[in-house]
Image (cartoon, rainbow, N blue to C red; front, side, top):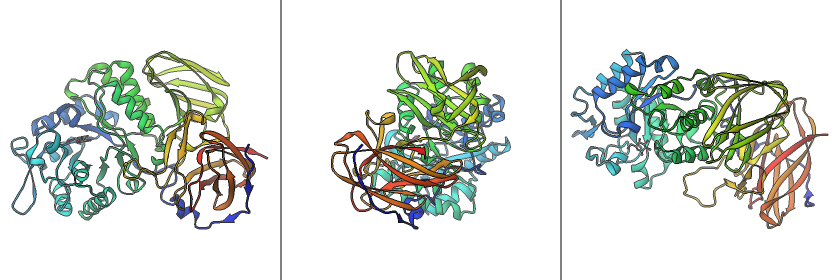
Amino acid sequence: MKKCIIFAAICCAMLASCTGSSNKNAAGDGDFLPPLMGWSSWNTYFVDINEELIKKQADAMVSTGLKDAGYQYINIDDGFFGFRDAEGKMTCNTERFPNGMRVVSDYIHSLGLKAGIYSEGGDNTCGSMYNAEKTGIGAGFYGHDQQDADVYFKEWNFDFIKIDYCGGKELGLNEQERYESIVRAIRNTGRTDASINICRWAYPGKWASKIARSWRISPDIQPRWKTIKYIIGKNLYLSAYAGNGGYNDMDMLEIGRGLPANEEEVHFGIWCIMSSPLLVGCDMTSIPEYSLELLKNKELIALNQDKLGLQAYVAQRDGERYVLVKDIEQKRGNMRAVALYNSTDSLYTFTVPFKSLELGGKVKVRDLVKHEDMGVFENEITYTVQPRSVLVCRMEAEQRLEPEVYEAEWAFLPLYNDLGHNRYIIRYSQAPDCSGGVKVAYVGGKKENRVVWREVYSAEGGEYEMTISYCTAKDKKLQVAVNGVEQVLTGLNSGDYNKPATATISVTLKPGYNEVSMGCDYAWGPDIDKFELKKK
Ligand code: GLA
């Protein structure tokens, strides 16, 4: 352990606002909306859509039982745009939608479903760039925020909108300003209930959760294993940004579009445990039986629509095999959802100590894909998972243990985004010698640029030994705050940016949830691997 000097505690009353924690605490026993469930036209039809087709899909959502399983939205993606008229008002493509769009949303509503539409934050649509849709030129919101919001939500009466960003990117516009302005215009229509999806193909930053119900985190999905695995990989360390009715959107589903059963199970199971929106992307009039059953799997859907609204995080990792876990039904209760995900091309046997899932005593395990109780286990579970496969289960334990480890990759980073505009931005970074194989890099440099754990739990409160694991090859300073009470560690140096060392301090926790944050106000701090707590 590297010796370091610890200065006296400094009280930082402003800390909650510095860290952004006032913006969004991890979900309570929430009364917020769950991830959106429905269907979207893009994956199967691209821009080739029309009134008849959309109505048939809406009918099929009812006749297949998908509506009864919870799917609700029929979303029209790119392909409906006509040109703007002389006043700049948006019209629809009259060859594809000869009776206008209101007829379509009325039809969808008449089936007890909700209707979604699509647009663009910039000027030109994605379809105009990649699908030769001439009508998409100048069809985006830019310069028409209120005019378009009025058409989509008042005149055409849609309930949801996905707002893409090909045109915004082409013009180099500021994402946050564009999306905030569009959402203001939508709220101005009086439709405060309208559901918003930001489609910027990268985690956009914490502002997204203030204006949208979901935000895309990755480029477009395809019915191929490579893209499923890639998108899951993108979402592994974004659990801190989901909650309170806002969700990381892993893109529309490719179930029923030719993937083998094991890959479909990974796709649906992980979308469910990660609380992604569930938008069916196949032709609902001809879904293979197996895929339809999977899409209607009540036990998996329950994980996705769970009232806590949480996204599972990585509790254990061996290369590209991951154990994901989240609370369901009750926070810090005895019931947790767990996935053993083997993304590799070979068999793998997981051994998962229940302690790493904070579960104690006897643990009942139920396989949610097979709808089978697997038995009662103690201490650990050992289970072999086929290549490109997953076991998604519910675990019910006799006891819930107090956590001892807090990984940096579970933390909320108030200034993090994945937009790629700034190479010095704070980020989750692969580091094989760090625990979980991941650390947080680019900590500090300014006050708000911190690593924040918003729910550090202590049943009774009291004095703890906190051991911080960090990496840096230069002497660095770290400010550690517990509920706003700060300690400063100096002279931290592990000798290598990828090899961690530890420093131990004493902290006082109150009973229940505590906020711990780490940063360095005016210089780069060390990279952070994790911290551990031991009651004194
Ligand atoms: C982008 C989006 C897709 C789809 C198309 C439509 O590529 O990411 O989901 O909406 O545009 O052109």
